[in-house]
Image 1 (cartoon, rainbow, N blue to C red):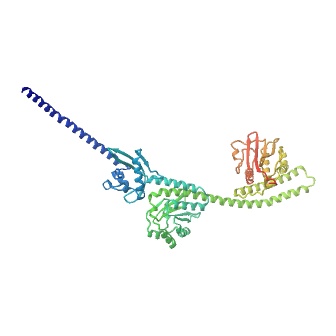
Image 2 (tube, rainbow, N blue to C red):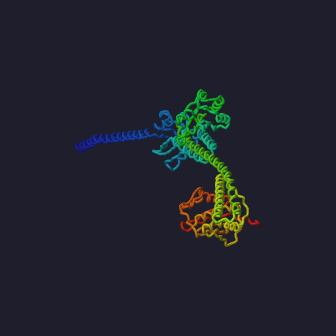
Image 3 (tube, helix red, strand yellow):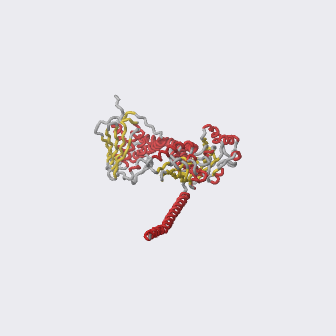
Length: 575
């Protein structure tokens, strides 16, 4: 009995010890459980805090595409409060046309191996739908995670409206700069400005330009809607009275951009100077406007008026950057076109004066030459000094006539009116004639003048008189820059379908840095005691190119210079 009691005591003590231990382990487990829950709540709070401070929209959804997470960035972006969107379908945030496609894409992503995916670029953005029904472009990154068989999709969206607008503006302004730089025609430039604006930016564009008398003229008006052509004509032809209100008055007076977010009919009445103008503006349905002054080199040239008649193109302050960018490029283009037009007028006036002067100079020069030629045979036993004086007069008159012809030829070249009468010309006899004509000049300078042609030379397709002029200019130039005792050689050589003419001297040569300029107008090398009009080589180049030929120069200081040009061989009689 005693043993059995002892057993019971022992057995009884066991449970007592166990009972004392059980509360201790349970408390530890409870403490661990509470600590884990606290850590989880803290982690969730931190995550929620991070999610909510993000400026991007962060949205989670389940397998059924129902929204489970909607941060403050998403509230700002889409316009929904969190409590009104949680549990609803993601389709609510997508335009109708994209919902089926999006559902297919999500299903494909869910079954795929990748866990993250990025979509949406500036060129091809994803479209989001706000609560107010407006759409916006977005860049989207999406991820998926599965825990205990439950799959969650989370997307981060960034509104790229401004980035896309900026990219489109830069692309447009780049295109505008290229197009406006493609012409210097004044009228075409104005038309290009207005056409570019209505294509990309506004419904109606009016270009108002100040003329040389500071009078404001509407030289161009273009509408996006072709049926408003009549209204554009009315506005473009209107002669504005600057003492009365008009659309561009404030912008021109202050030289600053003016943005009119809303234009009422009363505004149209106030800004219209005629009934026809008011009728045209009403037909255009003008509801907002931006007016930008055109300023180049600190001079006001006019104004660009952008008129919007549709809600989609209503002009607001965010449009100012694009309007001013286009106006800047337009002002520079208009200024360049004006300068070019002024230069053209000056050139025409110069050509007219030059023609008159050339005509008036030729008559007295012809009289001087004729009298000098008549004087020589009438002299009885003239001495050498007298004969030399008569010859000097004759040479001076010939030289002056040549200079007049050079000036006229240079003018014709500039105007694109330098004509050649092409025919078959035998080069060898022509070169022989030119050399004989130039020999007195060479002899007077103690220079040997020779011709070289070691093979049969075919005929060339050329204007005989102009080819003679080319050779005379090159030979005269070579003689001028060759010292006494030197040599000038005219060479002819035949190619497969051309003939090469070369005029070589062993004179002073041309410095390497000067070679690119030898055919420039009025350019002269740095040579002592040698002066001229600086037109000869430019005219030679123009004449060779008028023949369809090519010309080049080889030279080295101290070794001489060779001017070469090639003309096409004349077709054979059988051909």
